[in-house]
Length: 452
Image: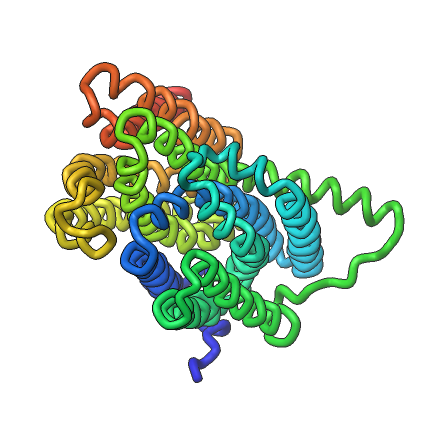
């Protein structure tokens, strides 16, 4: 059993690199197991179901990104506000806020899940499926909805658990569900021959295990951030709505961040279908399996820095805030360089794990991945700055950057670049959007220094 580490975390006095490492290492390890799950899921589907199965998962994936974004929005907002209250020694307010966020997000997730079950054909059509892929997409979609619900609950809970001082338990809440999911993936796809239904059901069961783990912690193991019994009256409801509104404004960029991935997938799916057909979407699906991995790695940097920066921002310790951000930025840049190196030079064996070697989707994906990785360094820098702006309550700045890089610029690049430079523009659309976003962030930083 892993020893509890709550007493060893001191956001206000501990050495920044040591403090950051104590949170980052277990957070990254948890992400690594999520990465292993994502890769395993894609490899099993690619080899057990085929390239059409990968294409179907890619068409449904934006829905998952939206749910994940909703979880991130509540999680970031609640953890930033909670960290500030803890820094000001107001533990009761922190407990009330995280309870309000937890309950509200759960109710919303359940309501949306019910709606998704009621109109499956309309949703699948909206996501851009073709006539050939629609039956498989529906099969995956209907079994995948519970995972969307579990994702919201687990996301907000792991943020709260880290803020409560137990990053290693949060790590386990990612690792164990990933292992369960991988084992069931193999069993359901290759042994039971359940196809995409089996892949989705395995993910559901892994997500359920994760929810049970975070629920156990929230109910029985929390230290400072215990769930608070809210009063059932009009004043309590009004205060809850006010507090939720404030938390959502802070965490909105987290939702936009996941929405950006969904937008990238949606725009990419439509444009790849237009230029390269179903084989193009199958090739793009490999990129979409790898892209969230890069996102997770860099997001783990931002998530690790967030409680440190938020706490010291609340305590008005500006020097520690700056030191924490600089350290996180350097870590993010290093992660970006590593991702470029590994995925760029290893493109052929990586793609071969998903798609049959020599097939048309395989050829598209190998060539495309080498172009796509060029934007990872800018992506890493952008995520680090966005996390910093969130942590110091500059929500509007973070939101504007997220909307620009993830929705507006990426859509423009997907439409414009293929017309200008051909199909290579499909693979360079996201890197180009990240580069432009980095230039915009640089302009914001320089402009702020001139004002000050």
